[in-house]
Image (cartoon, rainbow, N blue to C red; front, side, top):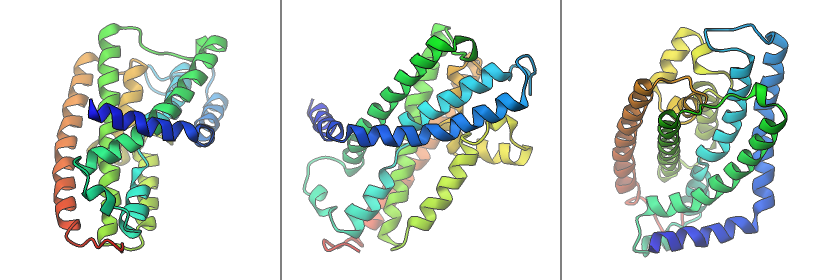
Length: 265
């Protein structure tokens, strides 16, 4: 119950800045729209790039990528590195009877939910007017597995980004690292192009990284491009990545907190 109270308190703060969240969503929505225009020019209505990947699948993919990006990709690393570590605000969390990881998760979650709601509203409007271009699975089991994959994708993203933020314990200028990770994420998570359409060596890199399991697999699960067995395999890999990242986070936190001073870095 106390965790719910913390979450609701952060919701109040986020709704005070709801217009800014809307602007952030609109910005993230632009790139997928550009990619849809590109593919609509490259493909006819009946042509397939690969079996099952036609203009309807591509359009559904990029619309859902925009929504998944708003829902699932955490941006907590900037807050952790700049405000908590470099400016010393971490000290106020150390005296609270809650794990730092969960506090930052609850700070980030309302932003994801609000921007995700904007995305769902846009999707419903688009589906109402252009339903033939949107494909979403209506199988209950597949849909349930897709929801589980999406939730795990968010936890993967948030854990990974919290680890990135903790790098500020050792590195003063972390923005270059954040930018490199952002570029890798655009390619390997499937923002620029579905992973299945990438060159073989990039596809292998994507499947070996955690990025594809944050965005690409949740999206193709919702459009019905995964069998139930494939979805279960994805869930297993997501749990494996969460275990690895959790161990890395604990090591980074315990080592980094020894370097922290209340005046910051």
